[in-house]
Image (cartoon, rainbow, N blue to C red):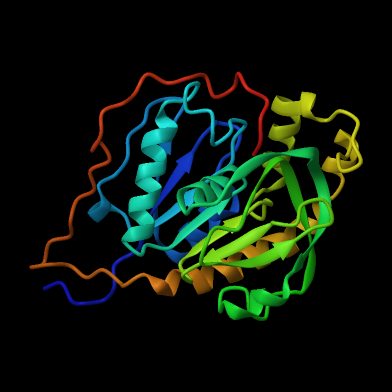
Length: 272
């Protein structure tokens, strides 16, 4: 007889391009014994039904949130994100994913005067302590950045972090939605892949590091991953544990919507 021990959480990941994967997000999921499924937009748009996943990760990508004509699946992706928020699922968005969260929650996403690409300091705001998710995290830390757009803090959200180049680096909404403009999830292979695929972004700029500098900060990665894990450990308890119903676990169906004709996610040099 099956007991009432909580089942593994089912995390779903929205991945926009093959060279920006979940990185250490996947590591955290697997270390917990949880399950990770993925929508890969360059292959198809297939979203799970709301009852078939418990938490959501939204990754980065070179497209922009306002490029719905070029990437028509953005419309349905935003609807999917809005439903996840309304269902009070734990949600984490990174870079483009954070910008999508701002857009869905009523904020604005605009092009920056200067891109921010490289390892630069991030500091928590005085308001960060209002959220249990950011409370007791380091006040300042180095983070990996790669973006040319920025988001505004949406109504009702807590502005949690900033940098010298970009004032709005993170926010928390209703203590179950976290948006990070920077990348805590990247490992060295992920950074190398961005350099290889998006090296044209590395033109002259005050807040743009050269490829050698980007690749030489591997010593910063363990601290980034530690902060990510601490955030995720605090975000996860907002989700009610699942238990088997009548001794049978629900089977996942990730074919709940029809695929759109996709735009090429590799054809634009945009913002992560």
